Structure formats: C-alpha cells, structure tokens
Image (cartoon, rainbow, N blue to C red; front, side, top):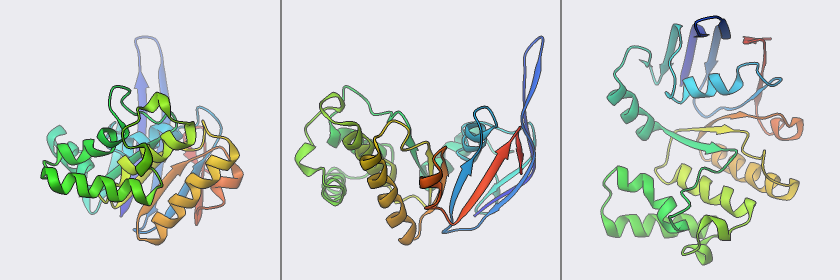
Length: 219
C-alpha cells in the first residue's frame, strides 16, 4: 500500500539546515498494523505528516496505492487524502463549536453525502462506539476518552483504507488508552491499514511490526 524510496526531508532556515529524515526506505503492505517508535525529535511525526500528504519530502519517492504522491498537485493530494485516509490525533482536534454529531458528520459534508444518508451513517457510527447518548454534547462536555472515541468515529466515518494515528493515547489514562487500542485492533482485523506513532511499549505491542527511528533513520 505504501512504498517509500530513498526519502529525505530537510528543513532549512537562513542559518541552519536540519535533516529530519535521512534516506528512508519502507514498504507497508495493505492490511498491516505498524507502530513507529523512537525518541523525541527523531522524525516520527515528520514521517507521518509526509505519509498523510500534509508535507512533501525534499528528495525521494512516496507511493500510495501505486501513485507517486510527490509530484501531484495540491488538489490531487487533497482528493487522495479524503478518499484514502483517516487521521487520529493526540489532542483530539475536535471543533469546539460543533456537537459530537456535527464533528463526526464533517467528512461526509466534504464528500457531499445526502442528508439522510449522513444521518444514518453518523448515528450507526456513534452507536458502534457507544456514543449515541452523547450526540448533542459538545467536546468540552466529554471526558478525554469520549473525545478520542469521537475523533475515531470522525476518522473512520468515510471507511478509509489507511488510518494514521499520532500518539492516539498520549492524553489518555491507561483504561481509555487500552480502549482506543482495542478499537484500532478491531479496525485492523476488519481490513484497515494502521500506521501509529507511539512512545508506549505496551501499545506498540499491538502492532504486527515496529519501525524504530533514530536521528531520522530507520534502525
């Protein structure tokens, strides 16, 4: 599903040049569950941002479903991102002014799904994640674990092939962290490809494969 070839990412300012990723080569097959580990500043989030088409490499190739994403336009990248990926963040990234229902509905609005179909899909997703009783609540009225489940519902409402999770348990206690990983494991069993950045050895153990980064390189 993902093929990275000799990929390097360099950040430049007027006075300094920093190599965040250095000649990365990776193959991540479809229906994999991969954990990316490493110390702070080693390039984990940079790698995830490039996989999520939110950043571009300085050199090399990044292929998604056989498409080299490096040379395509921003419009094409946005379309590919919406059709293929779901994102799960450490800080939840819910919109404070929207209800639970409206936060989960948002990706369907971007895809212009009919109103009745949107309502049906959102309510089915909220029921699946035990959130139907919270549909009219706002993010500040929810616990951290509930907010992350809303984020997960929004992440998967469009049935993405690929889920990119950046420290999804980082702001959760162990009970809620365990629940999020259990849900990700179920999604993987259902055929999703999951790439997860984590510092936690226990949660990395859920993955089939661990990629260790250090100083911008796979070690």
